[in-house]
Amino acid sequence: MRFDHLVDVLVIGTGNGGLTGALAAKSSEQDRVLVIEKQGFIGGTSAASGGGVWIPGNRYAREAGVDDSLEEAREYLKATIPPEEYQSDLIDTYLKVGPKMVDFLHENSVVRYESLPSYPDYFNEAPGMKPGHRSMEPSPISMDALGGDAKRLHEPNPATLLFGRLAFTQEELQLFVTQTSGWMSTLLKHLSVYLLDLPWRFKFKRARRLTLGAAGIARLIISVKNKEIPIWCSTRLIEFLTEEGRVVGARVEKEGEVLTVGARRGVLLASGGFERNAEMRREYLPAPTDAAWTAGTVGNLGEGIEAAVKAGASVKFMEKAWWCTTLTVPGESAPRLSIFEKSMPGNYTVNSSGQRVANESQNYQMFMRALHEKHASGENCLPLYMVFDADHRRKYPVGPLMPGKFLPDVLVSKSWFSSGFITRADSLDELAEKLEIDKAAFVETAGRVSEYARSGKDLDFGRGDSLYDQFYGDSEVSPNPCLSPLEKPPFYAIRIDPGDFGTCGGVEIDSRARVLDLKGVPIPGLYATGNCTAGLLTTYPGPGATLGPGMTFGYIAGREMANQAGPDVPVAAR
Ligand SMILES: Cc1cc2nc3c(=O)[nH]c(=O)nc-3n(C[C@H](O)[C@H](O)[C@H](O)COP(=O)(O)OP(=O)(O)OC[C@H]3O[C@@H](n4cnc5c(N)ncnc54)[C@H](O)[C@@H]3O)c2cc1C
Image 1 (tube, rainbow, N blue to C red):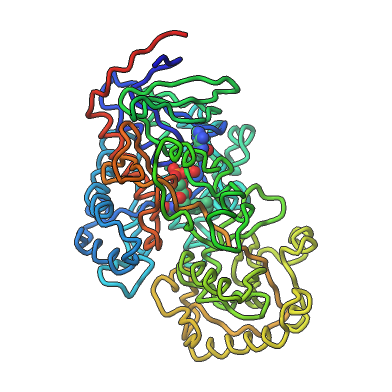
Image 2 (image 1 turned 90 degrees about the horizontal axis):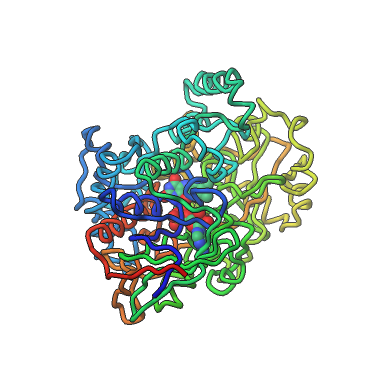
């Protein structure tokens, strides 16, 4: 076959999995690795994310002297992932190779992480659960270090920048939202550094300091650049090229020009899920669904999955996503995830029947699973509102809404009220009328939640019982840090949507990250990782449950391709 361009390894997509795979694929200076990305920006959803990576037994946890083992992690996953979703071989490989992947990055790149000592696994009662240190977050880095690539970094999710400018770590976020001692001085420190950084502020709106997913991707970009691996932006995979059943390259569109790229050792597909593809959502995902509710990047239309299917790949879990309620704030570029506010005492979530759906403080994936079950059983879960009272409004942040003691209603953007994003009323009756939800049920639910707050026991859903629920609760509120009576007017409601941060169904791979065909046989030359593959940790058992496997199987694919000579594919100029 004749190609316009020939490399050893072609990587499609620039999320954490793709870039980790590219680094692992280049084991010597002679190896030619090329990364392509359809958007003009690098990093996909990974760059917009919290950047948390769940790898039990990682080097940073070991350095902290944490007592953990592969067996305990396996026991935990067995207890928290249903048998029909439990992919035993892949999970064993992930647990074994995950820590090696972290070592590889630490030893061969500028990628660095910090252990999260108190971010617990999400299912607290499960055997093998750990209260912290299984998840890591990227070490902050200055955007300067990216040089010219700073302008090519994918934009952050609006929720990951304070005032649209200041980045914070996951540790700092917990400090800010729970307003734990030291939060104000930490905030003022970062704010003053930003305000005094005049030369930078002429160039960029956001502060120089990168954290979370942006720091993770920035560190990967720098490492890829140090290894002289080119990243072609604005270059889209159209289809795979095959010869005698082997994937030998891809047809791509680079800035409007169609090219063929040959890949002697193989192609790593890391092109994300199909969350932004309205048609695929309608075809595969449960109702209610809308592409406008996802916080995943606009580039993720499922093209990679479709191209792999055309090349013979088998897919599974297409009905699943990484579910999470989202907030669509007027004027913002992407929905925010609604996570921490759902644990604050004094709010709860209701549907149009005035009923709660589930324990709001539990992990977002399980909340959404409960919502889908309710919706499927005939209880309409659309629209959905988070309701709170004046006390809550004064004390706690809700999405973009800073606590009222810092940002009173008169200073809140008028469009947030006029668009229906926030609704305010002087009584619960009036709020129900404005929201057009069942008044009697709504008021009754409010009374019941207030009773539970006083007794400390949520008899309907057990909110606040687990360590995970309490992570973003208010430790100064007792008897239950996630529950307060909802009594003081005015009352507020914010619209939240049953969204996601990516889809979880895609091509099937084996423990060597090779894509499988309909008979379960590897398709030679084709590897995959990340959200274009069938998800591994489908119940989201811990913080970082998508990036951890994505990076691990990216690493495995890269090593596989680095260690083989590959068929002798000739290149010829056209
Ligand atoms: C706000 C937020 C916070 C999150 N926090 C976390 C967290 O802390 N931990 C965690 O584990 N997960 C988190 N997630 C989820 C996580 O970010 C995603 O699951 C993960 O980034 C998916 O990685 P990926 O490499 O599969 O896809 P992506 O990172 O989206 O990368 C895929 C790339 O492929 C490109 N692409 C698509 N089609 C083509 C094509 N045809 N040709 C070329 N390129 C193509 C896309 O443009 C994109 O850049 C979060 C998500 C959000 C939105």
